[in-house]
Image 1 (tube, rainbow, N blue to C red):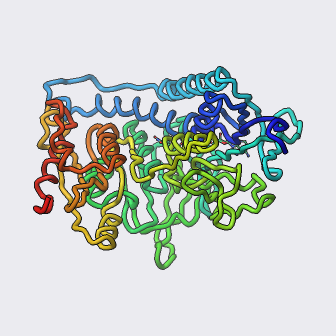
Image 2 (tube, protein in one colour):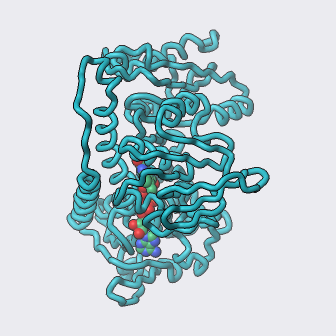
Image 3 (spheres, rainbow, N blue to C red):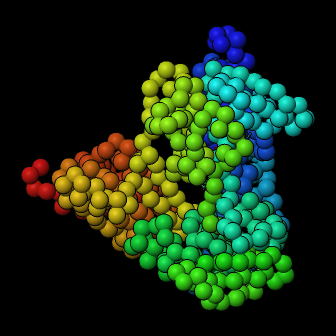
Length: 482
Ligand SMILES: Cc1cc2nc3c(=O)[nH]c(=O)nc-3n(C[C@H](O)[C@H](O)[C@H](O)COP(=O)(O)OP(=O)(O)OC[C@H]3O[C@@H](n4cnc5c(N)ncnc54)[C@H](O)[C@@H]3O)c2cc1C
């Protein structure tokens, strides 16, 4: 097919952040672009993820702050009992979602992107079938096709959801009611964020984690400190090493808990509601990937570093995939960055992505964040490449700003190479950890050395001085040959 005979230069399937950034970037560079969306413009992040959850966290965080009499008394403040309106908190989240969804749609329209509302599938090379919402089924062609179909909540076998008493984050973000007692299955970032919201609003939480410790995906030292405050210090009963093997929706919701190892029944719980936060699965089943020979890895689409889809390990021409459906650091900013990189490659500018420098954050109160290698990964690398691994800690209780805020519970751990000083990663728990991590992410991206970073002057008094302290400590430990 000659280029002129294609309907579009680029067709993007899925209008989450991955698809959005790809479509916008391509249109802004003069390409003729269509984007196909089967559900809501903006995808998970805008409608069922980052945006509504952060709105709920902002409101419930204020409730927590105003209800914390002990903390306020430290400043000499005595507040009246806090009252809140659940519906207005939910409205705040819904209004924010509607605004961001509308802005994003207008941005694409202004950039000249054709928006097709319907379900997309592959119909062969450079051919996309669309069943439009109107019922019309047609095939559109493009020189390049970008798959950005994202992910959906994973519900393990044995768990029956009804969307009302047993639900996933898709429904939880609507905050339709406040159960007196809610069980949250999973202690990853989504489970933790909702535990933060629910406990601030007066719900009792039981957290069920199948692996042998809560917060299994976080740095163990950070977890020790964070769990003391975010779990043990709240109305949360955390149970690790147990599996919610059967959950029956209703009033009450019945949960059978089994030992993770032996699978023997260990307890029965009756709660008002269950939030299933056990991870996410790629949305790739209905894409008809078999038609072009793409084999997925448990549904995740294999890609190379420039976002080209791999078939039998070899990059395919004109087919790209970005975002959660690729299974790489499933976060909104990763999806967006991948979308831009895919388009740059389509435009002929060879670009890859540096996953090591992509930060991640959990927006609990206080926050948790990380970037780069975990300590276990850094140790492996040190062994493999024969360098000595450095690790230093910087404490919030030694930071003037944190002390002034009476929020000195927190820790930053910095990992670096003792030979070159290169920053390998960082893990933070404490006030504004999500903002603090960016400075270190930038250093990781530039593969900078603490020897140089230790001389960068930070504003006093700010939390950023925690980073300066860590860089200085690390620089003092570099191997003397430098
Ligand atoms: C509760 C929660 C909180 C989160 N908080 C954060 C956070 O604070 N920060 C952060 O970075 N990330 C967060 N995330 C993760 C973030 O939402 C995802 O990483 C991000 O949305 C992935 O973007 P994407 O473009 O790959 O996919 P998605 O956002 O999932 O978008 C994919 C789109 O494709 C559409 N689609 C699927 N199949 C088809 C098809 N065949 N045809 C047409 N359209 C199709 C879907 O309807 C969807 O709109 C959160 C997620 C959840 C669930």
